[in-house]
Image (tube, rainbow, N blue to C red):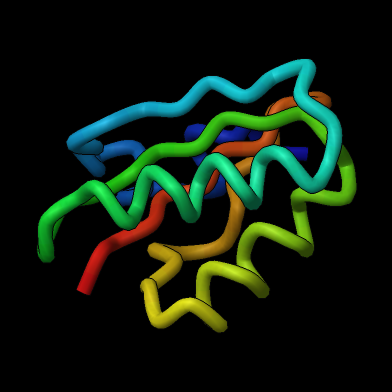
Length: 89
């Protein structure tokens, strides 16, 4: 199995505008806080979300897309930690 850095290649080069560390927050909070943060951001900015709730692996991408934002690549997992990069477009 490859380390996260090898599997996600250019995803490691993303420079987020803001980072939300939501480790320890149960669902639905990673979704709620992510969408709230996106509302405050400007077009072209990138939000990095760090979560460890297993349900967020599916819930965050679904709600991000439903809200009209762009998920940059697949979620990056490293053990229980999941990273999402969301572009406000």
